[in-house]
Length: 287
Image (tube, rainbow, N blue to C red; front, side, top):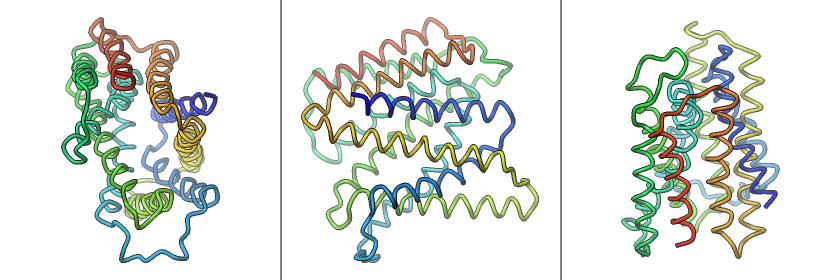
């Protein structure tokens, strides 16, 4: 279970870093760009993808290309959600995005669900409705629509990414970790092109602090993936334990840090949403 704990810490640390970086005025997009060289290098040296025997014409580019767009875009949306909605709502919305991929499993992969798991998905949607509902003002933010729009985009966006990851896992022509390498490479290429354009046109100024924060972001983001995969490998006979520990761990730790460290104020409806999110995860994992 220690791998699950490390993965939880890495996941929440990503959100804390993005929120703190925004608070001190660091350029989030530069952080996102510098995160990818780290992710690519760590993927290459730790997972050692077999690039020598790759047939590029056989790679699932129809999945890689959307992922190259979605991965950096979701990082940017995550940063905005942390700013306007807060860490608590953002983390729960990200965790509950699993209900999107579960619904896709029924429609796309013809999986059969029990009645209780189906109810768990319904409870998940109820939790999202409570979380993006009315709440007290966060900081000095007065744009009420942003407090529900960004968590909603996180919910849908990460659910979409989960579906694409599942499609990648089903590919027989290329290993999953090799696909990770190419998806990170695509995300880095696209985001770097945008950043270079912004720097050349002087719409942005290079920030060494943002670069340093971005390198740390890459380590934390990759650590979340690595230790979650290790946990599944070690506890291969108990995948529901890993699934539950990861999701409830992130929800619980995110809520504690959001309220304690960032002084986020939650309405009663938001608290109900957090409790429903935990119930949803338990129902999906065990019933």
